Image 1 (cartoon, rainbow, N blue to C red):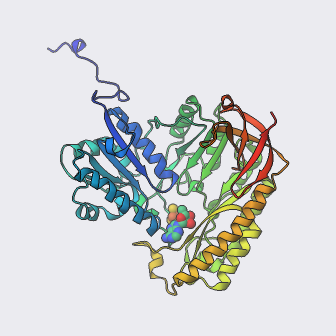
Image 2 (image 1 turned 45 degrees about the horizontal axis):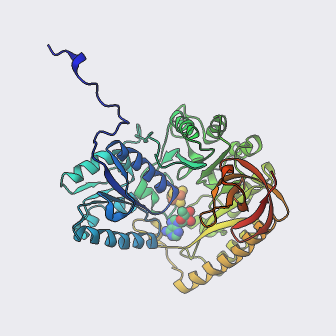
Image 3 (image 1 turned 60 degrees about the horizontal axis):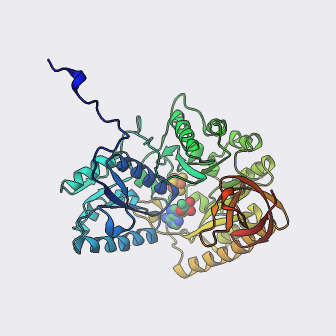
Length: 458
Ligand code: 5AD
Ligand code: SF4
């Protein structure tokens, strides 16, 4: 009989299982979800001895975590990949992988197009990144674009070892069940699954233990959190649970869908001082006719109604949004309705895009495309008006005292500190770097388009 007591116990999962140092270079494109997924891959590969490479030409493994939301994003991936493949052709023994939404969308076509690519996997490959990398290192070309079972989706619990600041993301769901007609995300990230709230809270606690104070909950449509899972809390209840974790000073979240923004979430703005006075609420268009063709399932009036309720609960709420111009069938009147919304809803900043045709999306079948020059002209009209409004917002802070959490010294001027207000305004002011991590009262002296200058009061 074997004496089990003489056998070494299995290495704990979090211990590196390979002493040889290996270097990984991550190149992340796109949204916060991708940044977060990269952090989770970093955490898992650390178990196998991978440290971050200082530069791509020192890496044993290069992973591109890609975005396909618009055509431009995809073009950037192709050019980066060209650069990394050259390193390999010059003799660097490196495994190159493409992860994320472009990988999911193109799959085998990427491997065919790029013969020196070793590994292609979609967002659902992230939990298995160790196995996928190991297979690729053994010389096989690996493709994994299968979606995982939603019932027991293996959300990764290891913390990103590179988190060392004031703020961190925590994923609360994956995928999206909506079918906005312009959007490729449901095809690349699959159906929605909510992460168990116990896991969310554990991750928040772990991050607070690393000095994080500001938590941003992320998901494609956070308002529908928990609704498909019997017994799970709602999104509003999750906000209260996160706010109750000792050490959490601020909570943000993204992304919200205006159709699903319930009164319980509005009430949280009344009840929870830790809930930031900033909300990103993508409207996409100010025309109800366009919203119908986008299958957003709300009207301009509903959107404004939600905004009014939120402002009644939190008068200083800073609202930001996403806008798409040039969607098929968008008339001058439709676009004027979007422009008018800028003033009515008072967006402090926005991300604005020209509509971009995406493969396998319903909008491809819509008639009346908007000519590119018209779309470009609309985009620049929106952006000019937005800059004016953004500047008015930051200038509106001049001579006021605001509370900020100090995130760090400025990258360009080490004697200047950067602090963020609850409304998401970044204020730069002279101060001692030992104050990083503290809350401070700052008087704003000058507002610029996206940031402000100030002086420390206390
Ligand atoms: N074209 C242009 N913008 C798009 N977005 C999503 N899909 C497209 C597309 N096909 C924008 C939306 C979304 C943001 C993340 O990207 O505004 O809210
Ligand atoms: Fe795309 Fe709409 Fe889902 Fe957002 S809610 S990810 S825009 S389908």
